[in-house]
Length: 405
Ligand code: FAD
Ligand code: PYC
Image (cartoon, rainbow, N blue to C red):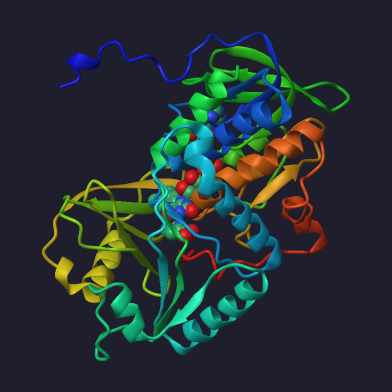
């Protein structure tokens, strides 16, 4: 079928690494690629390399369930995630690449009195911060999502829901590919199969470059955007971060005709679901509770999630699952990301997105590029400093993270 397309060009260049760059980004996931894109586009810094130990977009970017929303509790988070949401709006046009952002609505189910109180608190806080979020009765929730079971006699009855209508999904691979293509066209070198194995520092402490599986590459500045492997990379510079890496699993069903109109999430029973444009049901679980770097998790976690999905959506009871996988997510103690400077001169970090960083990809890349280019945080990421774990100014988003961990 593809024989007629053999003259398709490459979407990005695959150059040999240069001896040195102004900026090296470690990690060619969505966040790393977006950072490189905005470094070039907004700040005119194009002598940049993005290094990845595998293929670009092969980490959590290519493994996530693509839910996009901005209904976080605290003002700092609302500003960050809303910044991202605003960028999602024009992203396909900006990249000239269809990232398939679909505002189909994200509905978060409440099953207990505690859930009801927490979600209503979020809705009030969101409204004050200018973030869209509304309360729905069980009947309204069913009208919005007809497959939903709102019988009162089920194990976790639906007591209501919080709906963000502008939330939805985007196509994860397209996000990575679009940013890669855009960055490469502006002169950024994307170097795949290039694992960073060490960070070299001068006797005075500042970074001078990275040791890699393809030799030493010099750099004036380094941005580490390695998600679940951040602790490992930062240890190469002698830094210990407040992070734990856990597997998070997802699975997809066989494809069926359009049957599911929105995104539904339930943190209480560890399940979330949407339908991809290919027709597969995209289902995700809560985090495995052990620390691990293997991109797989326990079967009991996914079967528990499927039990919950079958109870909430009985019409899916006879669906067959096609495949499942895991990604390694980097969780901070307050479930908010770390974006900013480190104690090592020239070394910057963007991590701790845990179970929820896909939605933030454009905003994260945009503010991190500013941070690296200017050497100081953008006002939006200033509160997300590493230093907050010393000062105690935490941004506790445990309830908004939406996936139990
Ligand atoms: P990644 O895409 O993981 O990129 C990091 C890159 O660093 C990888 O490509 C890796 O190979 C590279 N790397 C690591 N170590 C090295 C090294 N030593 N040298 C060179 N390269 C290295 N978020 C949402 O908002 N919505 C969701 O619905 C959602 N669902 C999820 C479902 C699952 C199953 C998982 C696992 C995550 C989910 N997330 C979700 C979270 C989201 O996927 C991540 O927060 C986000 O994708 C992180 O992007 P990233 O670019 O920082 O990381
Ligand atoms: O953060 O919205 C989220 C999310 C959904 C599934 C995994 N993370």
